[in-house]
Image: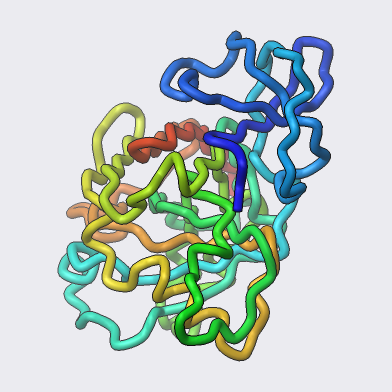
Length: 282
């Protein structure tokens, strides 16, 4: 589908916004790099014609301007199910994060006092590139994938515990800016094997999660097949495919995120996002 390698949305030194090709520069510090730019107004343009101009990156922005919704998948790593002492699910555990959870890869996450017991979840995230409903047998689910990005399914665990939530995850995970993604969208060509990538999460430099995406219980194709049955997956939808072990909720003692904590999540072949938590006083 996509004719890019690693798509970056950014602001230049004059404050103008562009889409560019990170190319081989994605492994470096993107800020300060001069990259080829695309003549597109959004990431779903489909053509990706180059302008012929290189532009300097002053600030890396969220790779998409908005999403219809973010779909989360719970308990989708075997090692995470083991740490939670829960059985392997028979079907994907699905919850939603609303559109306003979207945030940029290096944006501060402002957290209201109501969002207690703050947690991180490093996740491989899939960006849907065109609408899909009732995927038929024989169709390739990856034909509907624009690309892959890094995501953090930020969670307020207090509101996720069964007593407060009735075992519904959505509210705990849908506070504003609880879904940072980026720094690029890596195409299917750039990431031919998305289920064999290294994923790591650090909090203030302390390694908390260290896993590979080959531990996924339900792979990307299975998730798209399942989610598209009976409902339309709109282009721009982000699917956060689940988190491995090492989240704060299952550490002993539980080590919740605090004001000023910096969460860095890196996925092989895509890059890293890094967000500071700015927690309001109660």
